[in-house]
Image: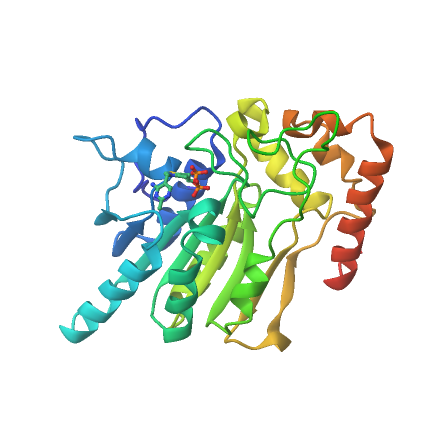
Length: 294
Ligand SMILES: Cc1ncc(C[n+]2csc(CCOP(=O)(O)OP(=O)(O)O)c2C)c(N)n1
């Protein structure tokens, strides 16, 4: 990656933070004619500690629930002034800010057809406030509000299929991505921004603190998510389901999902529960089948 970094170093993110990698890649792909509108969450906290900022592009921090609504307003205002051409408007939120609290604003932005790219960095919990579960937290994960114990295996619901819910709005572009496969992610950012109308990218971003993983393993783990079929990388263009395609196939044979789970402290309690591991593997297999990933 030899593009200029528009997300400056010196912020206060943890070592190995997947979400900051996502932001750097995102801005490098989008370029400097970009306006960022970001919800509350780790990425806002670590990058905008007053009087400092890591952002080298125009940036607005908005409330947890309304990044998509404010980004929609920026789009409408620039259009009204005849100044919309040549600018990217990107809304950013974590999974808590996107799957849960900002979901209504996101749905409205998509339905009204605003020319905004919404990027959700997905670290599968509310990390900033102490690792509470979100509707993105996967089955079996330990969080501070889904602790495993005698009567609990940890989180007992499956992850909300947010990218599919977004796809049902038929946006101009929707994709899933991983910081582990950065060229795939950056291509998707460029594609999304090249289209008029709403677009959405869900980028999977490991959190060493919340996932209880070694800082230096974040990229490896982000790749393992894809190589085990746990995370399927796909895209859909122009609101047309027939364009839906998987952009990165796992190796053949696909790695067993336990390879992804066993390196993370948040799944440690499952390691002596073969019936739970089997259940997760079966779920992953069914999802892969549904997407034509073998
Ligand atoms: C309406 C509202 N509810 C709750 C909060 C408190 N709050 C701030 S950040 C945060 C968690 C953010 O989680 P997520 O969006 O997943 O981002 P991450 O911290 O993981 O980067 C919460 C609950 C808030 N600021 N506003």
